[in-house]
Length: 394
Ligand code: RFL
Image (tube, rainbow, N blue to C red; front, side, top):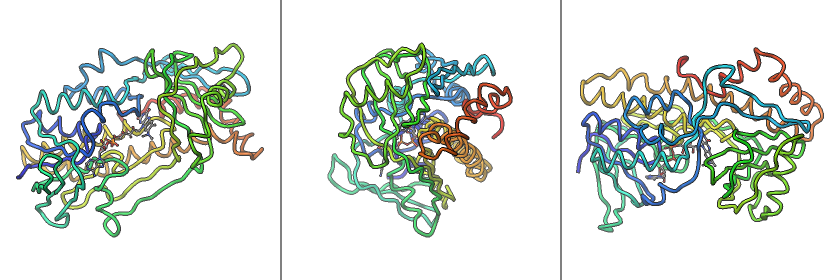
């Protein structure tokens, strides 16, 4: 079997690349280790930046999203027992979109496989990449149907298989290096079957640890609670979770979080990494396979889409017009945004966690940083620009 492009991984990055290729009439094969049902339900991100939605729209991929996604126009910080609303739309004219990642993935799979006739194999096992140092790479995998190892040759490989995939691993050791940052902090990531207690994202910067609320839909809300890294989710029974959320998000005049059944509860060890180079021969990494950013600033999905737009367009230019320029510029264009977002996540981490570090000096500077957002228009503008992400500078 031979395809011009094999895409490893059917997350937002891989499916977007696949859709762009199919729209231009380029054949490709997407390989995914999970089932279709699983990826269509896997809960994760929800915040998508305006430029990313425009990018999807320009490629015919935002139909459902534009109908169903919610527009967010503000976020709210809670510290020192008070509420501080940050009206970013009022300040900048710009907004965030909230659209749960499983819905986006469902739309993209439907578009790729059902409408654009793209080839996709689900539930494959033991994916291996071969011939990465030459001009004709190939991929092999165990097929769940035939129980045999299938081999697929290709001209280009898109490694979109996320943080635990094989693409990044195939570059190491020796072909690439991964720069990593550990925050030394855990987040208990929760999904509750309950409406949000406020119409916007809430950041509780409390001396006992950060707490966040991210509305997902009228029925489901994401919450985060700072906890020790490696903590056991079983240490967080229902009553403890809700008591802690009420305390850390508590503020004068604020409604307490609406309690509901917890349908996801897991501990994330907060870390970032960037793998460089993102390209080796004809293998191009995209999304979490190349770089991970802790969900502090809700940037990961946006970076995955940014890579996918650039890679999809560049592969189309190469395969339909022989134009190599997009592929040549791919890595540098991705990494400018990646490092910019990583830097912002680090900055924001201190705002969330500095007050709970057990260090009175850091608590003092963190409080000053928080207050500055609400007293200095220049500081507010800088925060809004980074928080909303801009298309223009990259
Ligand atoms: P994905 O989504 O992980 O998709 C990779 C796909 O590859 C499959 N796979 C393989 N396929 C073939 N062969 C293999 N060997 C394979 N190994 C794995 C996997 O099953 C999967 O289907 O990567 P992609 O496409 O790069 O997309 C990245 C985003 O999913 C990720 O950055 C975001 O979810 C991060 N993130 C957030 N980002 C935002 O922009 N806004 C948010 O609000 C936000 N919240 C979050 C988040 C991530 C979270 N987790 C996972 C820590 C909240 C959470 C809890």
